[in-house]
Every structure is written in C-alpha cells, then in structure tokens.
Amino acid sequence: MIAILDYGSGNLRSAQRAFELASDEVIVTNDVKKCLEADGLVIPGVGAFAACMDQLVSAGGKEIIAARVAKSKPIFGICVGMQILFENSYEKQESTGLGLLEGEVSEILAPILPHMGWNTINVAQGSKLFAGVSEEHFYFVHSYAAKNPVFGAINSTCNYGEDFLAAVEIDFIVATQFHPEKSGAAGAKLISNWVGSL
Image (cartoon, rainbow, N blue to C red; front, side, top):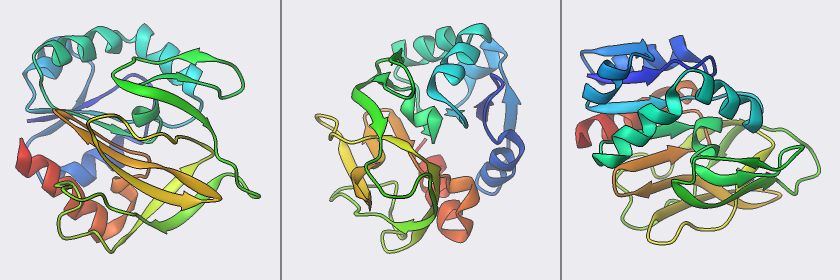
C-alpha cells in the first residue's frame, strides 16, 4: 500500500492517479495507523515552504514522518514536499524544516522565475530512481531549491540559471524537486521504479 499524506498541500488527486499506475492500493490519508503501515509514504507539496510546514504540523504530519523515520520506512517527497525535508528555507523568511536532509533551500539565481516547464536531469551515477529514464525531461514549477549535495546521498541535479538538486536518494528517503505525477510516461516510470523498490 502507498499512502499519500494529506496535510492540506499538494496535488493529491493527480498524485493518487499517478501512483495508482504503479500500485494496486493507493490511499490519500493523514490517518496515523495507515501512514505507518504503508509500504511507502508520499509527501506532496505546493506553495510556500513556511505555509506547508505549518499545515504539516497542524495535521500531525510531523509526528507521522518522525515515526516512519524511526523505523526506516520509505518516504518520497515531491516539490515542496522535498524542500521541507531539509533543515531550513529562506523563502521570504527563514523557516525551519524537518531536518531529515542536511542543507537549506534558497531562491534560484535565474533571470526569470518561477522555473516552470520541462527540463532534463543530470542523473547521478548509481541512481535507481532514474533507471530507464535518465535521458528524459521532467516537469518543474518552483522558484526555490536546495543547491548543495547531501552528504552520502545520490544527488541528481538540474540547471536553470544555476545548478540545483533535482532529486536525492539516501537510505529510505527519496525526493524530487520536479513533479513526477505531471511528467507523463517518464514520471510514471520513475514512480514505478520507486514502488518496485519497496
């Protein structure tokens, strides 16, 4: 079972449809028991970092994620759902994240923001997430990103004005700055790769 964490942020239904292509059972929930029992937990996110963190805390998501981390159970963060896994963000104000990934989120240095549309990924050697789709394009919508490689992780990057982290794979955590659920066949294959690893 795949649980998509419902904490009031993210493209929940499009994420559900995308993950249903790879798994027979996908639920959208913030039920603690179901989120802990799930083979994988998806953390979506759209909008501002601070607002997503506030919503996550209010919905009990912080405790759910902490409980999964304590048991090393797989987590997949998407877009702002990736960003909040880091230590902090400087989007409009300094905000504290979950601190599961070391580093900070800051504005991309590019002439036009947001970074919106399709882009390629510089896939890191050893990536399992991008198996079969390393040459494909993925869909981005964001103005902020983590930029420094996470120590000990498989760090795949993208360039828009400057290099930033497009995806991180470390232990039981994977995260993408792009939206696999909006990335067509390439995104579907990437999701299938993750589901197949659970």
